[in-house]
Length: 458
Image 1 (cartoon, rainbow, N blue to C red):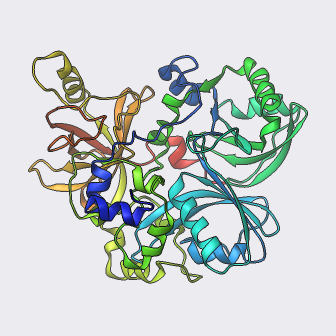
Image 2: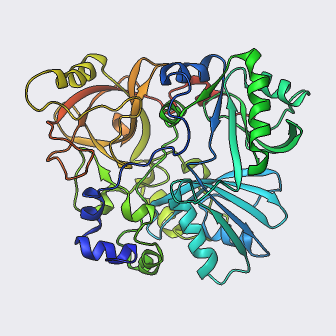
């Protein structure tokens, strides 16, 4: 039995085979009720009233403190940390030596020389590895998500979002919410407990992310629900939670670019046989035995605006070369709005004889953790990759976030998404099926006008 990622790759024969035939289920939101009402109404609520997201269970926390904490972050982040005061957060983005994305997280500056990274495992693992092997004068503690952790989280983490979010916060705190800039932090008292708060906008509307010690969880949660009762506050369950990214335009799960670079061999040996990067399934209609074909750059997934060359970091030279040779603008992130008739016909094929289209889970249609479908033009030429896919009751459509050639990224352009695997893999969630080609219309990412225009402007 392999004891780490490097050995697992060797046993499988290639990183592609390891992930393509993985028998692990796709990542989900653990321990959170799947639906509090129904996922359609929960989606509608974040545009119409206000919602409460429970983020306590599906993300990992990595706390980094000590004299070298900021130097560690600077050595890994594509974005600048020159202006990073206490009570501010940043979108931390890390790339490998070749400039392809390893992962991202939200990085909170909690106090002098203390930072906390919150996100899914790839970027957390990357930071953790360098913190313990890189000779930095730092201390770390880590709290993994509830699929890996025994017992309760160290902290609770909630978000109150939507047009009525500030009304809920006003009633929960008994005071007027402060006029904070995006990604700046403050403190509230809710339910008699001190709560730290980040000005955020996950659903594309103004709101706050709230957190504190787990022992305060029940008191804060009850106070939020009580305050929200007058404002139609809706709790969002695990099924609807991931679909908010379809509207806000954040691409959550690029395949981490770690599987073949010899410079990362020690890192692959550090990652265990049960690590997220070892076990997570890869799938979709895009198939290439060259795992590098699945890698994405920060420019392709919308992070070009935060790449900064005011500091040295892993991957800097590669990103500078991408900007110099123009490859940084070759592809761009878009939203694809799938044709309703084509999608309905594919979904309805399960009622007809013979193998039909790959089953559509709703609201999130993904059947793997790392998902890549071919995006084609009218002549069948591959022009990009469709990734995060699901149904939005707000848009009354199946949506996906895609990275496509810049020339095809004009809003209103018709493209085609290929749904289903060429040859069904052995993944447990993949049944016998046939591929279908579904028309889709290119639209901006974020699709939500509020998320695209106003909620970050301050």
